[in-house]
Image (cartoon, rainbow, N blue to C red; front, side, top):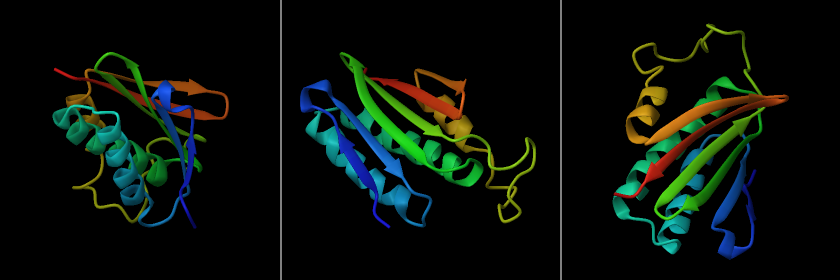
Length: 138
């Protein structure tokens, strides 16, 4: 199964990825995101943080939500990178974690995103949820 990449006009500085839930998909998208951010000449410090935010938000969507996970990257202004991941809503009832997760390794992704992002949030909407994070170049 391949990762689908939809590219909008280059001057919009926006990329959208549809991520099917298969092993290795997050690492494939991370490599593509790294190349895009290099092309956009995003600060290396922001790129490092952005790749971690992308990984955490996508992994959260794969583990906890119904597919598909859709990643949207955009430059909302000078030096501001927005990372958004939209999914189709929770895959299991609130408070019920997957039986295969290690409790010591579970639940840190949101804290990582909060620590790295200058602004972040969650938007609930019909048919799903969008988690977003803004990273600002210093």
